[in-house]
Image (tube, rainbow, N blue to C red):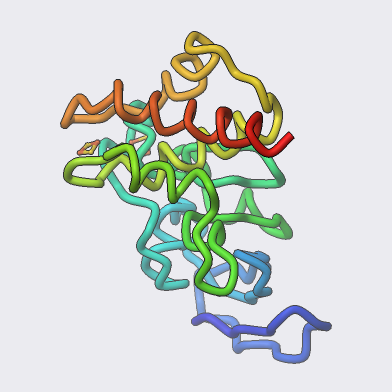
Length: 176
Ligand code: FES
Ligand code: FES
């Protein structure tokens, strides 16, 4: 059961179901109180309970990066974390990057530079590159490659992904 409790104080207490644990997550600015199976992975909680299907499931073994989200400001592979371990955490998924329907410069750049083909890896790539550009506004090609090293693209579109990240850097330099 998911009780959405907005951004203010917690007002709702859902009934505890047998065998479940109640946790609280703030996802893309919205606070939720959720009953989860203690064995549930965070990616399943995000997709199946919260209905945020941007983060994808690829390998479920921590290798592909399709499930990447930001937890407490750091990218994590959400298939490697139990939902109960994230109790109380603030999470950003790919759905939380755009504001009021306005894509971020990085998202626009992926579009402009053809930084995706099938798009399956794209949410994870965007999260990894968002963290990179937040922490390093002037990344080298090697920095970009290292930042997305944990994210696999089965379409092998890496060159255009790197171009897309670099284009954001160039745009920033032009507005200086
Ligand atoms: Fe999580 Fe592949 S589904 S790393
Ligand atoms: Fe298809 Fe990366 S665009 S997996």
